[in-house]
Image 1 (tube, rainbow, N blue to C red):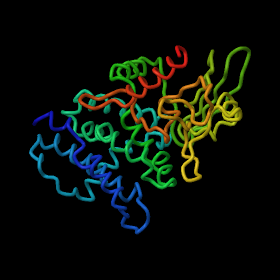
Image 2 (image 1 turned 90 degrees about the vertical axis):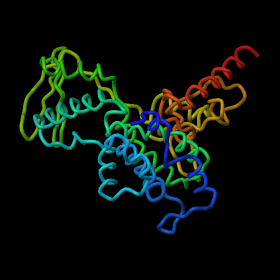
Image 3 (image 1 turned 180 degrees about the horizontal axis):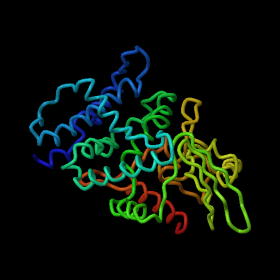
Image 4 (image 1 turned 45 degrees about the vertical axis):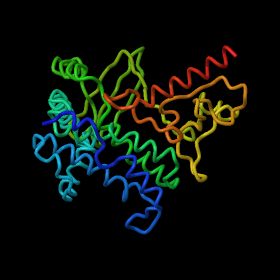
Length: 318
């Protein structure tokens, strides 16, 4: 199989195809304005299916670009969504499901893009990122469709392609095997936290277990939400209230993220602005999808970082 052929995509969801779709006033099968779910996502799943087939058949399907069957499309959707371990009932069942999932993912990752049909299919996310970026940033989606993509579909793409290096997952499994780390989760799991003489008692209740863990340190942590309207307090609130930042709106609808200019400075923040924003806080306004470049693919992230750095230097060294 010609590995280079896999790394030259996209094959179907190209910028030219999507730009033509937008330029000709394409309407989805529902007769409404262009829809991500009806018009673009099928193209993306077809891209996944083609890449999966290239590896699975050893390249014998290189030119077989006919539309995949519905069974194949459903299989690609399942790969994209991944195994939802969090829906497993019971702590013990969750622990086994999570362990097996990580172990299986390591096995596929070691095969790599050119050895694992699953990883090859998921690489479609990387190869199609510039197509997504061009479509989203050129305002080709209605506001509601833009937000639907960011809220419903993009998280699945991120979950299926982001993650720690293989070595970190191997270390995690080793710590679990040793009994140093224990994974807790699953459906119908509740926890009660009570401080007690400098320590913290965490009581866990599930369908198959009830126990109390005494911890020296209890850390409350969460991933930040990009949508500024969800931040009721803190630095985001203060910056928005002070007029330094503004949320990104499209057609009167909050899409999420900070509205920024081309150099990364908050739009309409005034000539004396000394704040620049890159990456996920700008999602919607500037669409990134990945922080790192991919072999043979242009890195928008590096270009924007260079533009931002130049703007900072112009401010410091007029």
